Image (cartoon, rainbow, N blue to C red; front, side):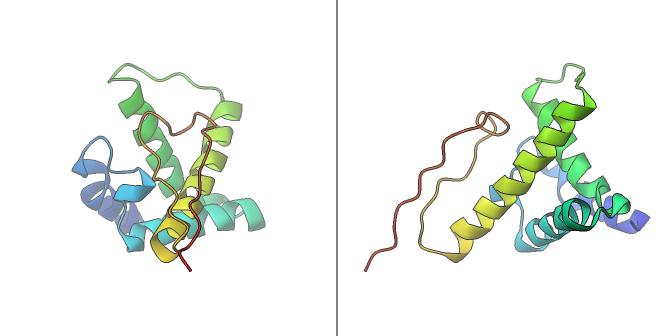
Length: 122
């Protein structure tokens, strides 16, 4: 991944507060880029596509820990990357359809939350 892309992500997203990497707080550009990189990693095993999503997940974990050090196994970190991929997809659905699912909160992310969809109005 280009170094300037990570710098842009840092400046445009990571530095914008503790909840900036929640999918509902990402602009369309970053939502699509993160989703695309996770797709490239999981579907085609493109190893260098993991840096931005990993930075986003670590940002959330550090925020959830209240500034305390985060110690996490690689297996659990992988699980969180899978969860983040799902949350990015749910956010895209929320933005582009009338299904009306609620965006994930900082408290709910990485908790195996139940997602409720409200059907489109006829």
